[in-house]
Image (cartoon, rainbow, N blue to C red; front, side, top):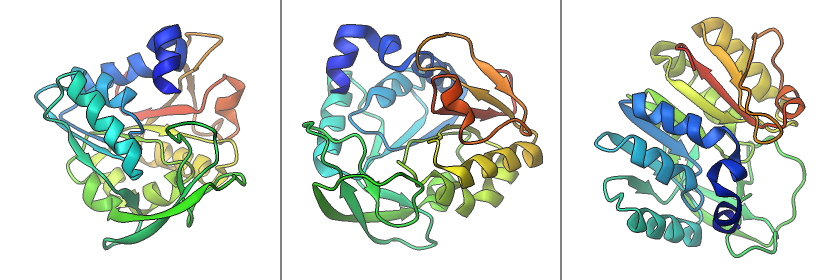
Length: 236
């Protein structure tokens, strides 16, 4: 589905400003972490921009991870590290259960952990077991982090809150409307770490929207046709 959309509408037609902002952020980053790589659209865009620097992508669904590998190979990105696992908030590695939703697609885009997620009820095609890697260990030393973890964003960021406040990496986070705890956490992090908050519209406008922590909530991005938010200490 992702590749068909990009073929017909182009990267910006599919993702709006998000992909080119991600490329710009990766060009300035020293070490990149991407949680939830799916088939690799952002990994290809970011991997090209960050070529020569450390780039790690985490994707837990085996068949999706296989497509991700092929797409990186097609684009000559042999140095990107792929971890076939799920990022988890736990302090130690463990096996976790992952729900594969019934989406009538060859490659599911909404697979999610069964525990610790803020998402609306979804269908289930099957449940698989996968390895879980502590998010804290993945975060160490990163100055740019993208998380699209289908509702697990709050638990991951909360588990690494002290690291984030210390290192103040740039964060690109998917914020679903029902993720109220995540919205409050991002506002708190912005206040405590002096982050600026930017909303990146996916369609209808190319205007990046800067909002104050006091304004921000999980429901705000959808007002701007978005679910993607950047927290950064630099200008966007």
